[in-house]
Image (cartoon, rainbow, N blue to C red; front, side):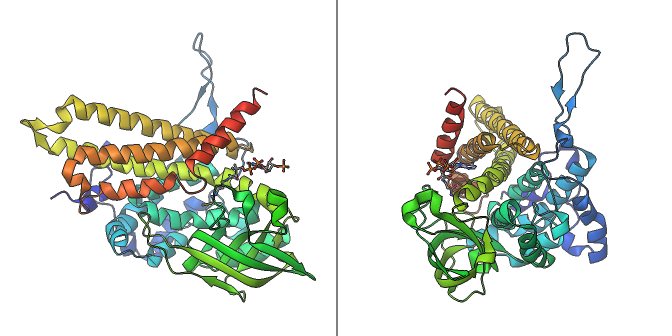
Amino acid sequence: MFNALALAQNDLRDPDATGPVPVELSEMPDAERSSVHVPSLRLPSPRHAEDHPSADIADSAGTPGSRSMPDFSLTPEQESLRDLARKFARTEMAPHAAECDRRPRFPEEIYRKAYELGLMNLNVPAEYGGSGLGLFDQCLIVEELAYACGGMTTSTIANCLALEPILLDGSPEQKERFLKPFCAEYHLASFALTEPSSGSDAGAVRTIARKEGNDYLLTGDKCFISNAPHASLFTVFATIDPKLRHKGVTAFVVPRSAEGVSVGPDEEKMGHRASATSTVRFDEVRVPAADRLGPEGNGFSLAMRTLDQTRTPIGALATGIAQAALDHAASYSLKRETFGKPIAEHQAIQIKLANMVQAIHASRLLTWRAAWTIDRGQKGTLESSIAKCYASDTAFAVADQAIQIFGGYGYMREYPVEKLLRDAKLTQIYEGANEIQRTVIARELLRGYA
Ligand code: COS
């Protein structure tokens, strides 16, 4: 019988790493765990650094006719970050991925461990208690986590999406007041933009923010909100007047404990079943004006700028799922025999594997390029949409081909690849459906020709 867990616990990507199964983090004493790993996450890796190490241009001066070439190597700090995430993913997440998918179950104990290791709140600067990582470093981590479980990764990184609006437009006082206590302990937050009648058309939000004295009263419904059943904080996008369309959208920080906030039951989803998703209702929720992010009408731009940042890690998440699908399929193709030889020796299978690995390399490079662009302080709207769109379409196609290579076994729940297809599907939908990514890409492209 094909053993998904054993497969997941071995490092299939690194031929030198086929040794013993890594040490269980859960078996390591607390002191040893933090002394080994946490400092590597606190190493300086500034957001928007002009000189991101991975982005160095290696000058190959001296070689006649040579041109400067990008340097794709990782720094030692980045390698240790990636190794930390890989070890956590394979020892803590992978062994529970199938069970959490099947039941489904929200494995809070795993998210708490991720928080303790600094694998949550990745984008929050260290001064507010986060890991203070640039986007490139976040992507290294996210790909590793998603290799083990897409759903757990969604829940682990949902705080980055929810907190990004505070990082972008929060005043220093708001950052201090919201981020510090939030990051000081394990907490989950949710980004509440989507509504039953406004998903792709984000400017059409109907949740009303009615001004009353120095407060706003928020009333409306949000849906498909990741981590909402467990969140203690929401960043909420409402409108001061729906007729103003996107110019009326305004963002607020709302604690779960506020009177009038109610969260619906966990939705039954096709994939990402280890994450929790639900509706959130705001019924005349009183929010002080001091908890508004930026001026009235600033919310749409804030949501777009947030998504410019967070779509790139979705590219990394999709790449992790695709890499897992390829590794399962390649490994299986060497063991499974038809017509007297392993199926890996049939050209039909080789062509599939070759196409899969090409698309995965392209996804990773596009994701790295988008992260590098944004880490250099550029907007990255085009690059992040390209990375998210290409990598998520790749993840779906690669998982589909992995099932094809497994044949009938691939269609069975007891084998790992059908979960990857279900998990890949969501990456084509959330943080902006790929039709929207193509709209954004085309608009950005055409701007250059106008
Ligand atoms: N950064 C900053 N500002 C932006 C921006 C960006 N990336 N994209 C758009 N804007 C600004 C525009 O410049 C414009 O500003 P002005 O009013 O000053 O001219 C304003 O926002 C409206 O832009 P636009 O006309 O492009 O808005 P549209 O209604 O056409 O919508 C799309 C644009 C479709 C791209 C947007 O609604 C979208 O991204 N939808 C998907 C939402 C999504 O991803 N949801 C998932 C939620 S998380 S699971």
